[in-house]
Length: 389
Image (tube, rainbow, N blue to C red; front, side):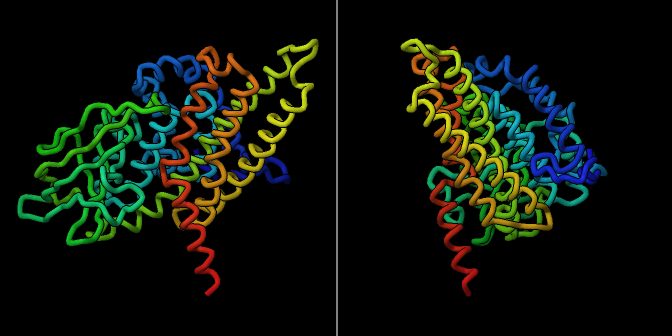
């Protein structure tokens, strides 16, 4: 797929800028309805990734969605990334999170900081789905404070000797290859580690409140020797591409919140129209109308913001202010709309008979992962203040 075809009519569609975007949306929506929705409750209960389903994403060409076609990817843009995360999350945000950790945190990040030799060795396996990827940044004592990380890599004749622990790593238990960050002479560098490397191990699955269809674990390095050629980019240059990759990651996460809001709004409206109390549909009551009306307005505002910012983020275009604003606004909306849906649906919403209970649990992570709300507030204030100079 390429995103260069012009729309068939003169009116610009923010949400499907080209015919290929519209085709992509339809394909992912159909796949989500037919394949993702039926298994969502089961794998939430199992608290693990549905690997065969994940590999189907490779068959659809989605695992390398941002990788140029000449390297085996789909060659699509940030709007395409938003579309996929938006549609998948209407049914299973946990499964979508596993996809994000692979397609954005690993594949997209790896592609833009790797050598041709590294690309030839790794990309075919991760784009096909043969290998599952992930990224290690957070540590037990350091999350948002990236510069405080304590994992180290020391260059020796036999390779880089790595010591430290990464935690809350999505796709950790199932992953075959990880991009991770460590300090080299006090500066942050990026590396590649493959499962089975001596000195590298993973903890057991870490149970969590939501997003249970993606699993997470610790990545543990104990005098782990990594080949010299597994350094990604320049030594000490890891922080730059880490921060740049956060822009597309945050838009993917914001799109996930939009997907949650869309689905919960749909369930809420349907229930309110069908549920009868005191001789009339409950959507005739002002309290219910407030939940529905405010949920719709905030969902539409999120849709417009996320898709607008997506147009301004590309490998050669950066918009940290926009991506931070999009996730800061979008993340609470998914949780709020899910909560409103549960309130409207009452006992039905609270029970697992309907997906609202699961979607509300899933939504909370989006206020934490990929940057906390507080980190977005800090970044926005810093960037706006810098613009005054």
